[in-house]
Length: 387
Image 1 (cartoon, one colour):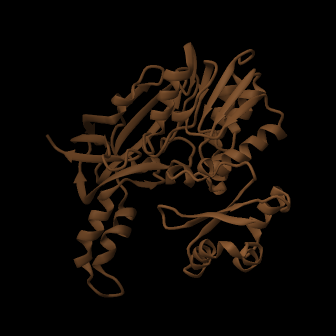
Image 2 (tube, one colour; image 1 turned 30 degrees about the horizontal axis):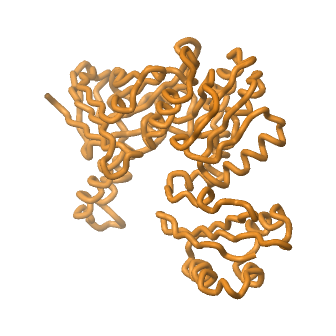
Image 3 (tube, rainbow, N blue to C red; image 1 turned 45 degrees about the horizontal axis):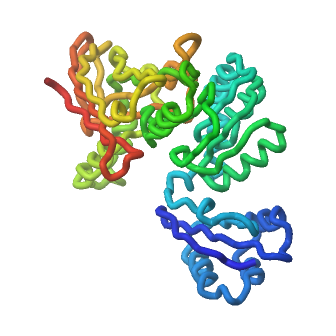
């Protein structure tokens, strides 16, 4: 075995690619070793002519950086296994998939919805298949062929084995859907594409592209609808924990740091569990999307002025954002504080201050979501209070 390449990822961690050579142990055995052996044991396995690359590997160990080992079989293409986009590499973390599968409302909604469809003699495309739970559900519902697209290299390889183990009539495409080519149009597209505040990660753009390129006229999208909701929120514990904390630290006044704490708080949405009693106004629908027709350009910039009616005398600290997805009939998959908790929790657009409001008072807010110019997988979110 020899080191083929050592990549330093965008997050500073290291991925080591080891190439199996003729006469090496079985790939399966080596992959098991990759997950269990220490750097010292690997050192005895790596051929001496890789000294330069090996030193990079060992230096990463010494510096305390996290590393992962990828075993390349004789015919594996390293370019397919080393996507430079850290977004895809982040989904090679198996714990991410375990947590999503343990999200009972999410997983059960998809399995129930897919099983309710008549998929006999139908082809299905699963965009961002991950662990494969949607693909497996489609196969169990009678799909004639399931195309599972997964660009995270290690998870995609495991998914191919999952298809074999579960005797799925389908294909695993280890690529970005933007690069996918199929010989057929499909009857159904399924995808769990939602991010925090619905649009974070911008995976919906990939689903829209898939729809336009691969879905038959009149085909089915799962989900087919999505909505974003907003409400005024009172979260004094969070505000005091993040901001007021600096007023008295071990008996000392450190309020000089409060302005930095506020900038941190308002700089990006806060993901947290919000209880129903934290909502202090009516709930307003901010945006609604028909996933059979929405375009990528329509997702690039959203803006709406909303007038909230305060339900009771209270302090408030920002706006709570949550979403629903569904099929237009039946119960949606909801991330509302009134619904069972999901891994998405709720997103808080904090204002950086603590404000007092009275019951029946009208509070006007303009909320803008614009795809970030420097990172299209994130949105810049701006909240302006008042007219």
